[in-house]
Image (cartoon, rainbow, N blue to C red):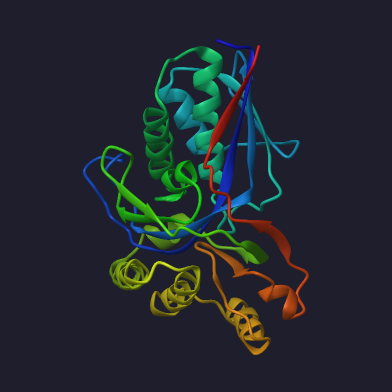
Length: 278
């Protein structure tokens, strides 16, 4: 046990996905593909009589974090920092949930394994309605391809073996719960098609192209996002929409070349990590 522990969870951009409901939150999830980012969520957990969550020096309520701590039968002070915006397709809530699980396990000596903690965070995220596949992808790192849905006991992950600079521009927010809570048949069909395309040709270029096609076929592409993607294409680049948010991402210098003041990071291979202090 320790007085304090720190976790880092990479951000995660989903390019395409399905919605797969199971009988249990741990079986529920999504298939799809995404990018783990070096811009992520740094989470510190310390002992506290009551649960309190602070993100970038502001107190917030995050249902997935509360569910993680409830599952661990623990109250704690959770302090997090991230350069990424909430609700814009970067997996921030998943990062908070997974970071809390990893760090709380170290602080309170629960003795759980990595996969057990990922399972708790994934289930909490699903029950909170804030994500379906971010947690397992953030635990993996790199360019994960989720071939089967659910937590570690049920899913099957592969990956595109590549690294790249990543640029992104955020225009606004979209509600994950609103999108995945309605009729998702069209979305899931589009996600299956995109995943099949990338599995046949697992390259970053194919990933971006399949992501762009998915956003159109799933009817999620907003006019503002389409305008940015078109600008990148006119400048000779390749861009797509991050799920779920009004965010455009491009590999290399696609957004910069199109004249946008983009945030810059990189694909992050290691996945979520934990550091303990005495």
